[in-house]
Amino acid sequence: MQPAPDQEENESQEGGGSPINLEVVRSFLTFAKNAIAGHKLLVASVVVVGLALAVAAAKYAPPTFQCQTEMMTVSTGVLDSDRGQQPLAGAEGMIMSHDNLERLIKDIDLKKKYRERRPPLLAFKDRLMTSVFGPMSDKILTGVLIGTLGTRVSAEVKKDTLIISVQWTDGQTAAEITEALRESFLRSRHTAEMSAFQDKMAILDSHAAAMRAEVTDLAQQMKESLAKKKDELKAEAKAAKANGVEAAPAKRVVSVRSKPASDAQLPELRERHAALKQQLTSAENDRSGRIRDEQAKLNELTIRLTPSHPQVMTQQERVAVVSQVSSELALLRSEVADLESQIRQRESMQQQPSSLMASSMGGGAVGSEPLPTDILGLLDERDADPALAAQVSGAVVRYGSLRDDIRGAKLALDTAQAAFSRRYQVTVPVEAPTSPIKPKRPVILGIGFALSLLIAFVLPILLEIRRDVVVERWQVNQLQLPVLAVLRLPPDGSKDRKS
Image (cartoon, rainbow, N blue to C red):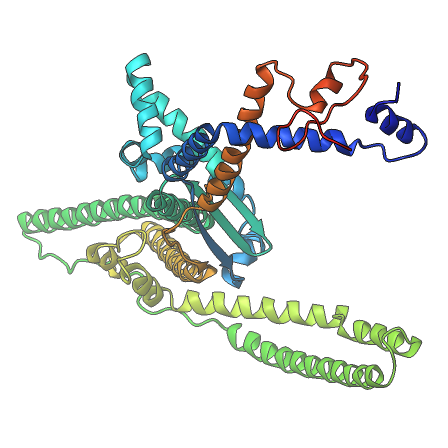
């Protein structure tokens, strides 16, 4: 018996031929071709249904819109001096905090917009869940929205730039959430950075209110003392008239406060201050000249030599040494400052009546109200008790000093407010996105078409295999039976073919 072609092919493979049986592969491809050709209607139906499902998925799949805003910070000496140069420190935690997200939901009424702007497919799912489990309570909905915001919102700090990004199922809501997050961050930072100035003003206001109450009490005591003294004088005059004695002119207690006494040491202090100030100016000029000379030498060496050259490094050390403030210069500065303080104090004591009048009556718009004119008028009373008048005068001076501090704090607060308005600058404004970032419709259509073709080609092949009818050679090989011979029928269908 002649060996079958399969045996010859197997022997050739064992002898080092190709490991792939091309005849079997051609047999399998022929089987697949015939299976697909025999189920043309099935193949067309699968492709049409697959494409329809892909189009429906591309059209009704919940979209995702992304909105982003960027904001940069600018250094400002007014705010950086007290709080450092890290205005964006902790921005991520501040934006993503539970309280901030819960406040945002209330501010933009996100619950209502969440229900009204749901995509059709998600709205259908919500109706189905409501019909099964009942309507969702506001507390549960708030928790769901906070969890969703936690996954859909991102805040990132890159150097001096804050990037806030929001992904949502509609572009308008994404833009509103982004805008609200940026504004909430600015409000929080404004509160944090202005709190120091506002706390200082509140403390000064409380002290001014207490001092005002003290001035009022002392003024009331002074009024009662003056009224009592006036009554005593009237009683003495009536008693003298009743006795037939001509009343002597009433003695008036003259307070030596009409004109402040001059300070004998003030001219001497001024002369000493002028001499020390001239000496300090000379020393400062001499120090500045030495610094300029050494710096010029350093600049010349830097042009000719490298920064690591020994001469350059030595000159840098000389510049550093010259730039230091000597102990003599520091002592001279301290003496000049001390003399200036003493001179101001003595001048304020000489001008006490006019200064306290101006500081107590001016600027009623800040912290506390100005003192009434009748209280200030008591300071010019000559019949008042000197000790009580001194207490009233001192209290009025302290009250005026507190009002000056309040005005200074108000000026600092206004300056900080102006600096804050320029501290944060929006580089990328919020704009409602017009197209979603996902799903990608061309990708969905392409994947749907490819899967439709794959299923349409595989399904007829599986159906033919399930028939259990051997029609091709590869099916015989799958049975693992010895092949005795291969009979090839003539292509024209005749029973015999001559070789």
